[in-house]
Image (cartoon, rainbow, N blue to C red; front, side):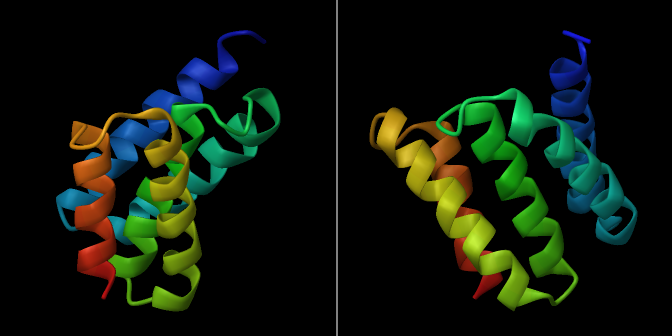
Length: 102
């Protein structure tokens, strides 16, 4: 229903904390499931979608799956850069995830 995107976004946030706590493998299915709900439900320019992609990219990078992570991280950063002012917290986070990937 209407709450599905909100629940999916909260799962993505939880998964981000899991990744930060060293549980990237456990976070991965939560992130993939969240994106399955968010992608068709939200406009492609929606920051919630960009942030979920960033979290998935980060988890993949932590797991050493850099080839899969890089496009997600770049896309998330580009989408946020189009709608957020320079220096915005979300842009700084996206840039940090990219640096960590490399």
